[in-house]
Length: 428
Image 1 (cartoon, helix red, strand yellow):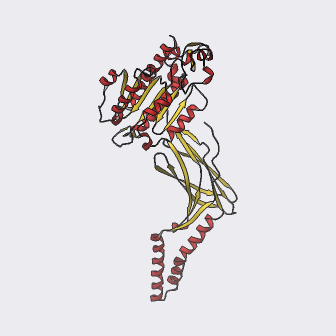
Image 2 (cartoon, helix red, strand yellow):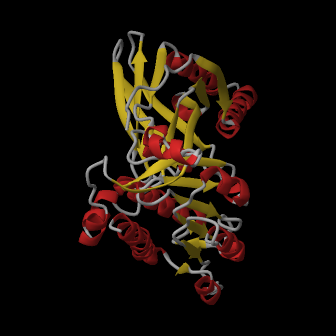
Image 3 (cartoon, helix red, strand yellow):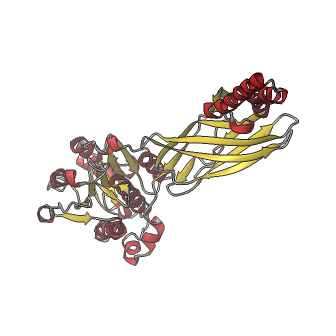
């Protein structure tokens, strides 16, 4: 992941002073009471103390203003890309341009997750800064969720003596940090854990091919068999030995994935589906399988370990909103763009499982080159809805996942189904 500095913090947007009226009223009430006592009893000490108490708020204000003046703040967010679960380190630098020491600063920041539409706040205390010195602090933010986490503004504050006034200065910041979904496991580890996977994907000479077929719009022109094309009068491409299977289409449909009653481990069902999809797609791509990932209105094409494909998928999944995940995929247009399809995998929730079965029955029909299909049904805690009989009728494998503990075994089963088919095709 690339690491670079955040854009410089802009100058302070505005400053404001908050008055704690309860404390202010206490000093004013006590001062006026002593003044009345001094007037009624003709007491000079009461007069003197009452004047001091009445001047305390003014002195407190002046000291607080001096404490805040000459202090500048700079915030840096060095890592712009993080994995879910990693801590985000914020680099804070306070500089005191005056000759006097400054005391008791509070730093308040609010991070807005634009993808999931929620914010989280944190507060830190900096006890003192010596004159003409700087104070550096590395503040760790825990629990950042998947999505684009943006720091729009942060506040530097200090209290006046006796806490009567609070001086605040608000800064603006243009940077954001994208948090990628957490993978269920390392893709390399899951591939090496099963020797059958590696055997099925043993890559031979890249110029060996096992046959020819008609040209499809997604094919590379470098693999056109020109002599055969001239003989037949239409474009014919070579079916390479290690490209023995057409791309996998991986789709996510979650109309009810964000509902509160559809949650595992206090997290929405959609978050588990996104992690499953990211791990499965990257594992297949690392094994040399082309993957077309679809959800809602966007798509990502991953082509045989090409540099940047996995990052592009993670960027898209990190920014996937609940609304986009609930959109039904136009399977007709997707099928026409991605024809031929080697394997179709649908990740669905309860309200979309019947629709996914209907779509897969069309994809796995006799007119396509699809090798089969898989439905991974993410069931809510209180749901037992599934249709394995119908799935078997259409030669579609069905997996029901009812808790987060079943995610990794199901992932391995899906990989085994896809890779074993490819392994058989690659050794025909």
